[in-house]
Each structure stands twice: as structure tokens, then as C-alpha cells.
Image 1 (cartoon, rainbow, N blue to C red):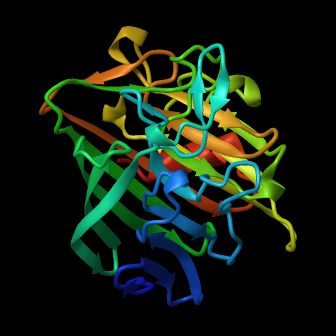
Image 2 (image 1 turned 180 degrees about the vertical axis):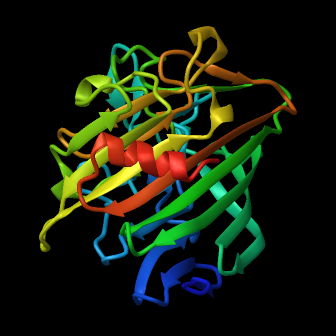
Length: 310
């Protein structure tokens, strides 16, 4: 039986909310209103909820105020910081360098639609260094699909296509490419709620925080709720074209993941090596995030992904 289309509400200049009429749950809010300059303003999804109405993202935690739900970031971009907060400088650590903190700005929505199969938010954005110059255009597409009460899960596909508008290359990096070990965060970034600290991390063939920096087509993070009994599992999956395996010289994706001192996952754009985008070229990445109630085991995850191919 069809559940009917999801409810999409646009509060102009502020946010878009997507809700499930069958349960009354607001699955997420997509906030595009600019926030504090120091936090590298950019759109983000928060709160992100399970079908049982449990929140699975954090917002402005006291350790990193620029961590906001699920968002596209760029921690080191040709000397600028579109991540937010302090900037890592090799040999000096994290420094307050406001002149390096940039932003991503909403331009327009090309599509806002919802039918029985899929809800779509299609947006155009611009990327800027601190001085406001135009460095890149982004076409972003967020799709919600496969809402399934039986499995207690729903899925979100995030596609970003970033085009270099400079006359010189854009160099995507991370603290690791700048000299800090195991800090390859950049790109799509999820910050989990504080209760998810010490959560379970799984890939198709490994388990635990030692998968930091590894390659795998998917990574799952399971955390236990505060305020309610039970667990939630988020599965982050690369689209086949993302290059999740291969030689490092081809800039394949590597996972950034932590469960201590906080829960965080990023399919890093540039973990070990910089990714260089030539003038006029476009970098496209597509990811799926499955938001599920319960503690999913590896066979359950593999079965779900096999039954929901790209």
C-alpha cells in the first residue's frame, strides 16, 4: 500500500522541512539561512530523525560550534577554510584565522517536489573564500526515498556537483594532507548526537574505529538513544561512480570516522592526498544515507543495499 507523498514545507529564506504524514514525524529540516561567519555559513540538515521520531544529528555542540547535522564542507580549499572554526596549520596546531574562513551561499531552488516515490530538493549554491570572491558553483540534489515502516528506515541521496570558477585550480585538502595524522575530514560530514559516543562502526569486512582512513563502499554507525530505549543505525554509502576503491593516485574515497570523543562520519574527498580540480572542471559526488531504527547487523545492511540498488 502506498504511503502517499511526503509533506514538503518551504519557509522562504530560512528552511525546508520534509515530514511523513503517515507517522507525523518531521524527517529533517534543510536550513539554508546563513549563520555565524566564524562557523563558515553553509546549508545543513538538522534535526535528522528516524521514523520513530528519534533525532540522529547534533547541532553546534560545545566542542565544535560549526558542526551542524549533515552538511557539505571543505576543511582546506586552496588555503581557505569552508569547514568553520579554527584552521589547522602544520607545526602550530589549530589557529584562529578568520581571514581564511569562507562560506557556501544559497542561490536558488530549481526544484522542490514530492510524489509517492521521491521527494526532491534541487538547489544552486556558490562557494566563496573569506573576501567573497566566487570560487565555485555547486548544483546540489537531495532526494528522499524508500520510506519503509516495516524496516523502520528511510533513505536520503545527496548529490553535489562543484564547478571551479577560478582561473587556477581548486585544491581540496584536509588536516591530514596538511600534516595531521588521521584527520582527513572534508566533504559530506555527519555529526551524531552526544549520546552516540562510543557507537558501533561497521564496514562490509571490518568493525571498529580502526577503519579510519580505510576504503569501503559503505560504512554504518550504530548509536544508542538518550531519552528513549533502543538504537539507530545510519548507513553511509558511496555511489558506484565515486571511486571508493583503487589506487591513491586516482583520489579514491577514504572514510573519516570517529566514535570518541564524539560520533562523526565523512566520506572524505581528500583524506591522504589533495584532490585538484582544474579551472572549469566539475567534481561530482553522490552518496546515500539510510536512517534506520535498531541496531543493524552486517548481513541486514548487506541485504538492504542489495535490495535497493543504485
